[in-house]
Length: 347
Image 1 (cartoon, helix red, strand yellow):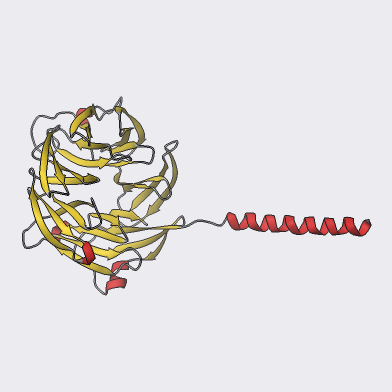
Image 2 (image 1 turned 135 degrees about the vertical axis):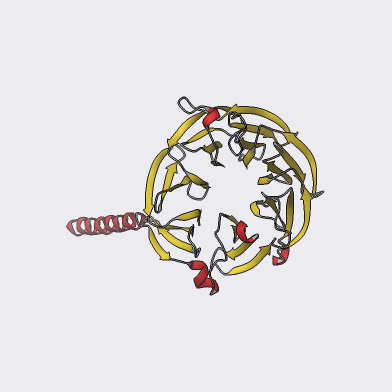
């Protein structure tokens, strides 16, 4: 009996030890990476690891390709294993692999002088590129890595932003105060929707039924009499305006707000960046915006893999990377860096 009791004790001790070991393994520190395009005379693409903020490589593009970037990267978009890096000053988009960062292609618009400002992917074979200094959207054939400009579509004046819901593509025409609807099946502008003055940012909600457009209002990019900044929600199915809301909250009147970006979370919250704050509202049904966080942030990004809102805050010099929990909208972490950057892309 004593021998049996001793065996039970030893077995229990071994099992407890295994459980403790498993618990320790489960608590290992999780790391994640992001790219940061620097703002300097010799642009670089830094590769950074979090949460320790370690710069793994000061210029991963140079390391992977044996040459430096030709100009300042203003925007980075990831799609199907590739990263599209916008260099509008050189009229091009550099396309690199998201695994080894080697160049896959260069989409060059220099022959037409069109600056690429935004991109969307309605399917796996076409990319639609908005040109903020023009009146067209380019269709780029990305099938079988061709990356050639197949055609251009006439839209409004200064199409600065673009987004898609399935085969429906919405383009914010900043100087025309309109949103163009392009159908990827016909490659044509099928409708024009009149919105508030200077539509400049656009995104689609999670189920693809609504499009949110941020308009600066008058007097924000010209010398005309100022008008309020507004968010317009468009219903995708019938291309009509569902609701328009002023972008304001208490001490932040809409007439003073200058939107600087939008991103929609997994909870369908539309986070709207202004010059002194981030306001949010329901991306499907609207409602008066409320304050999420104060501060001058840029480059909004929602990380659906890790379920976190990421914002960039410029310092002088350097930048801070804010990570916000969308469930309670509290700041989880702030990472401080000493290098000036234009934009970031979590990986």
